[in-house]
Amino acid sequence: MSFSLGRELFFSSSVVESLENGEILCMGNTNYVLVEYDPMVEFSSIRNSITSIMQSGYIPIIAHVERYMCLVDNWERIYETKDLGAVIQMNSDTVIGNQGSKIKKFVKHLLSDELVDVIGTDAHSNSHRAPRMAECADYLFKKYGDDYALRLLRENSITILNGEYID
Image (tube, rainbow, N blue to C red; front, side):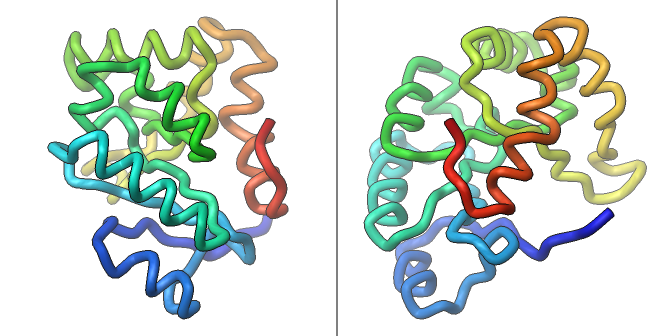
């Protein structure tokens, strides 16, 4: 087993400049960057940030997409987000349904249309935001099949860490 360095960063107006100056740690030794937003961010801000990050030569991975109300309230915006070049990440505990009925419906739409690219944990400890990846993996394999589950849980992560583009 090997590990790669990376970090999540909270998007602000200084992120693009920091990326261009090499001051931000990307995922492994790649040009992928894990980006988080305020839960009440407007979609225009997400769209503009994706464009700015892409123009700087980086690929944004939108961290825990299920937290942004502008996307939850209009899940079709994920298509535009992906068309702009962003990678979509969702948390394992959200996949197994721990966030309420509105989020559960959002998750179902995204997973059914295969719009999610990678699953993460956002784990803080075994008790606070526990990883719950095994339970998530079981659910994904049963509900969405081997091919998509493997892409979400393994293959797309390897693709990212190899610095390659996700299909």
